[in-house]
Image 1 (spheres, rainbow, N blue to C red):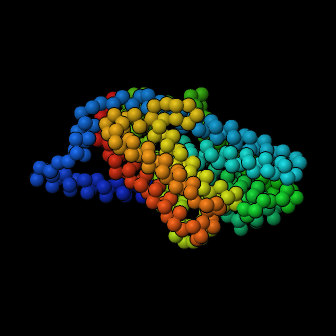
Image 2: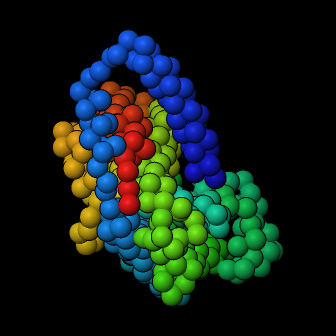
Image 3: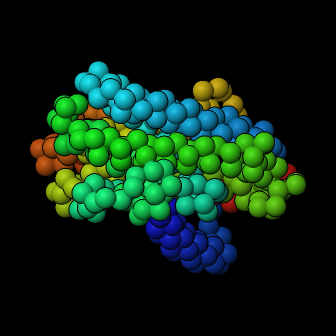
Length: 372
């Protein structure tokens, strides 16, 4: 859902950039222009990079490792919710709230690669649609409809997933009291968390070698892969994934509520987890670029460094700066969009810089390079 929207914007930007580049190349052919950038491009065109290790580590040490952690934490969240349902006391509620936040971390980091099964199988909107449709949610709660994992699965995406669970656990940002949660809400909470766990397991299986083995499609790009005809195709997919989330954070997640001064547009507004969400989105870019999640691997940085060490160093600094600048926004984010506008604008600018470097420099480097 969100992936397709931002991919469309990305396509339009890329098309415009290619048109400008074509005009520039025609001009250069007539005038004989040249620059230091030409030297970098020539070096990229003349060298051949074997991306096998990069792609394998991305698929297994980043994507599959992230989805495995997500599925494990979703299981822990389900266990905490089931304990709350069995004994609805404050201790169990706070454990479930902590488990929800823990599960958000790998999910938000995974948004740096919203392609493949998470997109084609409709798992992104099923897991993470927002804002919550509170009117229809109250309608279901007040109805006599049976609440099971299967019945929840049949509902609209805005009535299930992370943010519906968040709303039921946290409500409006202040610490919710366990005695205020109705039996019907507990029933809905349990069923929708079961559904979330089913979706994270589906996503994990889609990448596992013992499942649909999408990891193998990425790792074997240009060889046995039926999806990626060349290593360049897979490398471009990786960079585009990072561009999409940088665009979404800068021009959607942060900018939309900031520009409209509308707290209803804030993601993770009930739990006051917004700033952590945004930081984890950018950490996802960092994970992809460096080739690591829990274990170190070979990332895109090795390829970029081999062609343009200054670009590699600059981008690593830009990514960390974006994470730190987002973290400098005072909590809760929904108050800072009006009370701390300079800090929010600084975060937008820092993430936009990351996006621009990805689009203008790193993507171009990939497109201009030769891969085995």
